Length: 112
Length: 114
Figure (cartoon, rainbow over the protein chains, first blue to last red):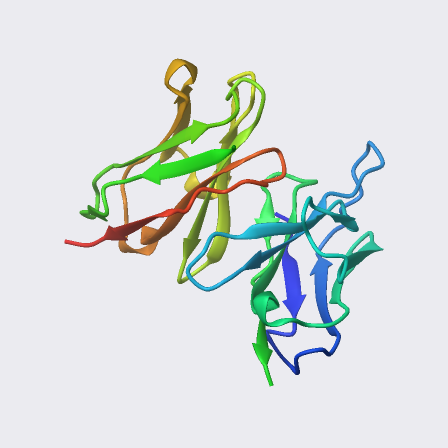
């Protein structure tokens, strides 16, 4: 199974600052069809995960442009340019290139 | 609009079978994959399996032969059944739409305890 490693575990940030999340996979997420199936989710307290980014860098419908994704192969990053209060929660990466689908263990975005 | 809602038993005894129904609206099950994902204190978010738009299934081998996913397209429902439950299976069970889970249900909390 592909292991998804997220760092840091916790990210204390001041509102308005930039936040950066890392996700590394134990093997390449490049599919034979040329796509890389890496997605990012935010889970707010008490709610279901909500998708933010798919295929590394594509924002899902309605996601603000302060969210951006980048990376390739085994190394991926999610950035929030200016953190707002509604961005707080746990951020997860998911790979769906290989079966079984696997999630990272999450990074908790907190206010400093 | 797209809606998904899981309905489960809440409390299940160890060794018993878990049955959860995901009722959807706003789309057709014959057009989308439907996923089951659970979130447990011990392992976080775990993919359990999916049923393709055509009706075939894939399962996480972690659940070996304990798990079964099926659907009734006429009722817009997807079903999860898992037997031989253990206390470690306690958690929130979600259904989600898509090869890449996009729309998620609210989840249903399952507690495995005697």
